[in-house]
Length: 76
Image 1 (cartoon, rainbow, N blue to C red):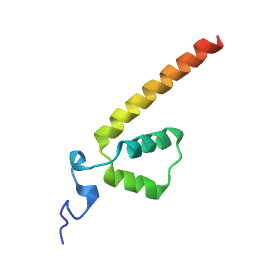
Image 2: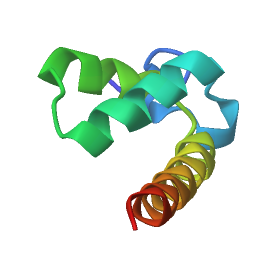
Image 3: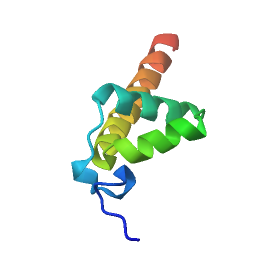
C-alpha cells in the first residue's frame, strides 16, 4: 500500500509544512541548549519548515555572538 503526502505529514514537501514561529524558535532554542525529547523532535520534524529553522537558527547564532561580544566589552 502506497502512502500519499496527505496521509503522512512527514512526507509533505518542506514548503507545504506549516509551523508557528514560536514553535520554530522553541525548537531552535532547545537544540542550541542540547536538550530535547524524542517525541518533541518527531513533532518538529513533521510540522516545521526547514527553511524557517535555518533562518531562526542563523538569527539566534548572530544574537548569541553579539551578546557575547557585548558581555566581553562590558567586562573589559
